Length: 147
Image (cartoon, helix red, strand yellow):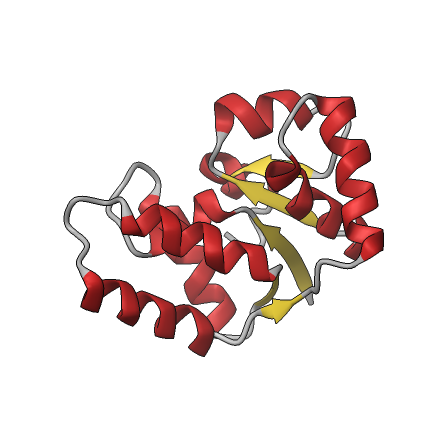
């Protein structure tokens, strides 16, 4: 089964109408049907909920529902181990990104999968040539057999 590491920029779109929300929802729906494996870290949950907290149309109850929806998906959760952190440090310094941006890429490397991001300007542009990362908007080009 094909697997993917997800950046929070993709998962936020599951709960918020934005550009490429349709593509993000397609990933989620394929996962729910058992077509792919999604690998995340506990940090992703914090990043997604924090991003939604600052959406003007979100209130406390909506945020709690989002928390439950995320947890109930039962994605594979990779703990943030010493190995992941150390590799994230290397990636962050090499690519000029934050540790937060490097963590899902380190997870992708560990599992030999692709990290999907919607963050074109920061994450993708800085890591596209050296790391296993693809843009959400182009997934159907990279993986037509899935998307």
